[in-house]
Image (cartoon, rainbow, N blue to C red; front, side):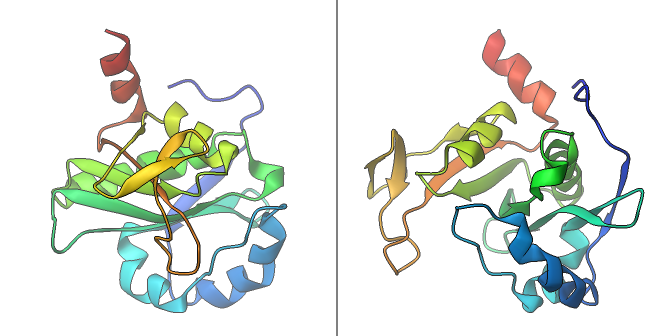
Length: 179
């Protein structure tokens, strides 16, 4: 996969529980009009080894992916949260985070990755599709904003569209759909 023309220099490292406090201070500023998700400290403690933080050349957090390999479905890895601040978007950070997570998941035996997005979030859905994810239509899903969604999946009127791809690199997923 080619890097974007405006790619930036950044490194990826595992999340640690100590990162939580620093990220809480900047995390709210990463969100535009979309609802801000929670950033749970327990995720850092229990999923740090399967999650990653992107850090730019100046030491600023440039994005994060929080995920895990399912203990009940060990062939499946779950992206719980993928976030990149506006100043780092469309510069290869999100792609690198997802591909890094895929590598960690494969090393732990996963063969597919599942991610969720709010049905009314075209940027998130577009990114997932560009990364080779396809929409799932699990039992009980209904169309919402043009994608199958689990209505009230979050219990507070929050709908969730589920997407899935093979755990290999995104390029492999693109090649499989173009042949």
